[in-house]
Length: 640
Image (cartoon, rainbow, N blue to C red; front, top):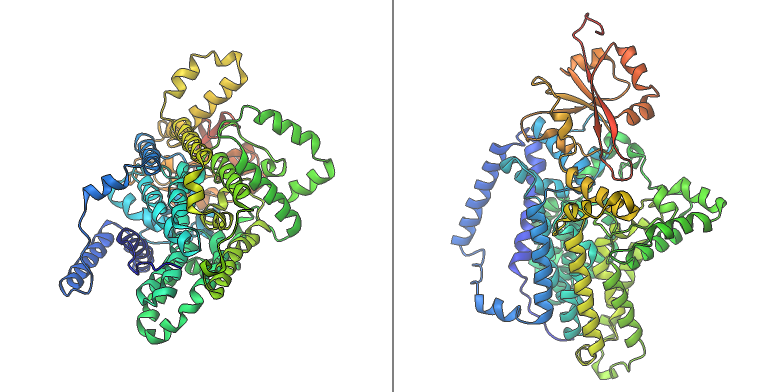
């Protein structure tokens, strides 16, 4: 194996330390009930003073100088230029369009706004338990941005940073797993253009955020194994903690990481005091605090007991086979697929009724029926059509190539370690696949993809990559398809989509009408409750909200102006008055599902007044739905 520098890129180190710092600071400020601008300002000043002191004492190295000439030379070749162009397009999409990721608007941003309103983390009173039970590593990174800017327009920068860190991490990790350096160089630019990475880079989704930590944890573990550098060991521990802190579904990745880090354990005994300190920080930025809170409030570390989500520990074999099929289909679906409706209809006819019933009991409807979309979006994308086909084509073309001579092979121990790590990466996806009933299986695997694909390239030499023109032409097509998808993305289109589609007579074409609806809903999603705000009285703060999985963030705008509190259908008028609630916005479907009462029954039972019915189009598939705004009369006055 070639020798590698023990140095770790300072942008990666800075990002790991910043994310770990923000996670721990969030918990500490919450414990002190100082989760606010003042609390964050004090923490940042203390951190800056500490860094300055360590630099003056030369404990911290100076940052390397910026060399524009080296940057220009590096990005003068076609593959880096193509990646940089796609990253620039993704940046423009995030800059020009407000965030529209549904999960981000429905619970990731709202939970932070609830915490900031109270000045600390707290278990939110709600029927929508994703606000409480989900990992919150990403949220702690967004909190200071929301505090100081009073807007969510800059949150996409978190994923832009994550995207820009991927190429270097892919190259470093691939080469340490036995991939030829020239092969790794080509794929370091190609792999980050996978749809799950590229579409999320201008978004507020959190799968790409975790993918960086997965690569960093394994890369730093392999670096520490070779160099016996305690700093890299500690950084690897922080990276894997941040990985689990970003999403509980990433927990199985501890298996390959444990295999990679195991030879480094002697470092722990030689430096046990700083290792213990790093362990405390790692706990603070991992999923462990949330797991402990979930046990306390709902008796289940994962929170699934409270959430009642589509993650069920029944029929694991059916889960695995169906999720594997779903992931494969979602990764091989073209960026734009006009035949999606025909496919969906065929699946409804071909899947037998008995199997459909079994699938519908454990999967979301669209997953049970193998439903595909006309356009790939950040909510349902995996690596995507172009990258997936190129990986398979490369694997098929190099499968029977002559292997290196025995003298060129790495020692047997390194080969066994590589096989164990790569096998464990694939094996670590099984726990998720065996319980998930979500319709977006391919997206959930985002943190795993970059470590799943090296197994396909072990027999590919750098000379083979350089000498085959068809491969380079195919790579160019992959870049072009990715660029096309970024430009036409419904969430952040870089073309006048609604203007053009509205002129194509959508009333005469179901496809055009569907596309226009999708683009319109995405464009309005960031501020979907704006029509409601127009009817809110000045004293509607706090505003009660009966909701489940709705883009609540819009009701908080402008941030800091109004407070939203959740209401349950079982709450009485006296309960509402006690909490200072004078107005309640109602999702009638949630009200009926959770309380068993219709709107009229609930209003009559509690002597409330309906003052406005506001139609809202929150989902392209559902159309406009009326939302009643209800007034809670003062005690003793009764209904008007």
